[in-house]
Image (cartoon, rainbow, N blue to C red; front, side, top):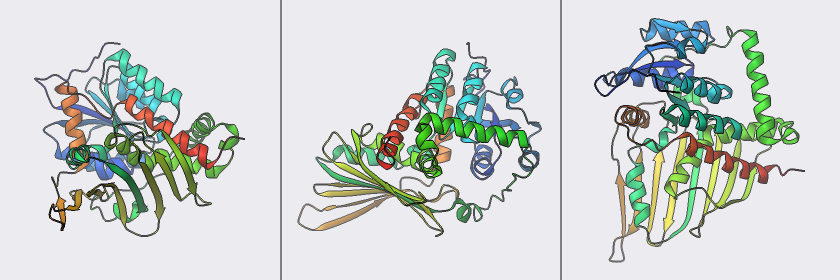
Length: 376
């Protein structure tokens, strides 16, 4: 289908319609879009929660609101549809928006099943629109310098990825964005449909036998949620996906998981993920080489402007030890992500977190699940 968006290089402020006005919209995307007013203008909001919709419309001064996403998608004053609602609807709504000629931003995960991922990829191709998946960590200012360092290392012996964080509420409640939580006014038919979609996707992704165990479903949700940031960045830093998952384990509740990956260059990567009740955000990737160790450290994205740093530990060339810390920018990854999206739509620059790229994570999830809960 032909792209009907009116955004052009001469009218470079993109008009945005947002589907989903929950936590990530209220604390991250709506404030960031306002700060990027020279690039974007939010013209419409959609949510099934009337209270969340009213709160955001008033707070961010947005006149048009809808409870049906199809109405928003077909508005003439929407160039870009941002899909920020429940994971179960990301793929289907992305396809609808692309078929309406709109550019699309999808918060991760793009899809929970291969068939849904393929549907988004096909919609992108047939409509000639830009679709970006929201892996904001990959847009951090420290990523390119880290890539340059890794490519300059003669040998990588080992890498470790760690993402053990407290619950989002610890950071959201101190973010200064004053969000509201609203689930009590969601229509019951929407709740029933959401649960049905979740069951369908779990059975397709895991198989009916594995999906019958709620711990397996929780593990998969953790992989598709928090872990997808790390595994996507892992692929970029190390030149693609691993050969295989050698081993994986988890707690009985699946609040903590770990996996060991093998890379074709001859090194292994240990991945750790967990969510606990400590208000600390402990996330980073550390790479061990012959005479150099390098680590990127992420802080919570809910507090704007916290620096993302690279620490380099190495031989100083004279038998001594040298440690260097790089802080390329205070500009947060969400802002950089939006700038990259604008360049892709207006300037026709390539997108690195495409639907095809995001689909690769589903194979990594499958490998981990096969080690955690083998098919019987």
